[in-house]
Amino acid sequence: MTEHNHDKLVDIQETVKLFKIFSDYTRLRIIELLYTGEKCVQDIADSLETSQSAISHQLKLLRDMNVVRARKEGKQVIYSLQDNHIKEIFLIGYSHATQCKI
Amino acid sequence: MTEHNHDKLVDIQETVKLFKIFSDYTRLRIIELLYTGEKCVQDIADSLETSQSAISHQLKLLRDMNVVRARKEGKQVIYSLQDNHIKEIFLIGYSHATQCKI
DNA sequence: TTGACATATGAGTACTTATTCATATAAAAT
DNA sequence: ATTTTATATGAATAAGTACTCATATGTCAA
Image (tube, rainbow over all chains, first blue to last red; front, side, top):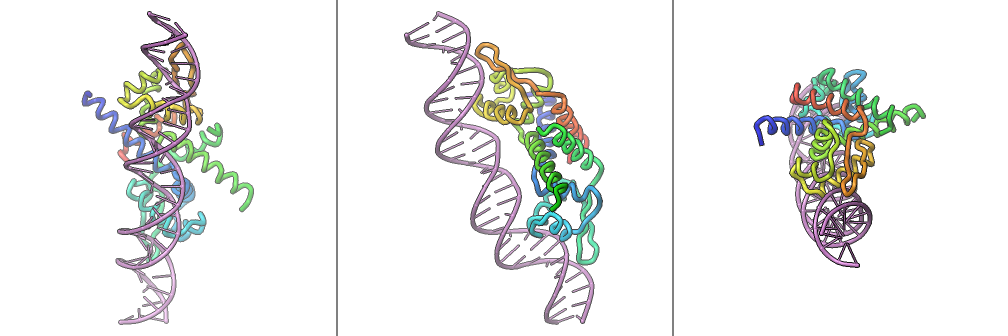
């Protein structure tokens, strides 16, 4: 295999990782929720009617993948989307899925 | 929960399904391979150095989700991408992943 | 300092899923 | 008709993962 092909396969793996972030119901609802603005952990958990622990676990994955950023404010930790790329990818997928019902 | 919110959650679920298609290494390589044109099953298997069976299983998932279409030609079955939506989503994800190394 | 609150995290479990193996189906070639 | 070739598919297995439960960490208030 050429070096060029190797790089391409690595890129494909990176792309897979990116899409994997968006392919879980809880994570995608977190992303959608943060779309409109920052929220603390408990607010997210309450909004999604999911346990604080489950949300925290998913937030860790989202942090590790640089999808969200966290900032401390007293006892709370406030989460927000990392950048507009995330919004763009969510929106593309959402609009395609809702328009085409793939 | 309002009817409106219920619809939105269904849409999120559809979006999750869509992203799930793209979040497997074998499937994404199939999509990338078909990006340039149609291919028969064995050619795909050979190109990806993956068993015919594994490829066939993934092709079934891709068919079920209307990501690819199949057409018979003698003994062979020729697969191609269903439409340009698929290409667009792949390209968005690929370019983001490669540019940002998220 | 102690207690209450907000969040994080390790371990265990249940569930999903991608592959392999064996085999079925189907078309062409002999 | 039988064999060969191409593809599909059910069952079993192995690996990954999302949740729960219990607990740790960290911050503020009293």
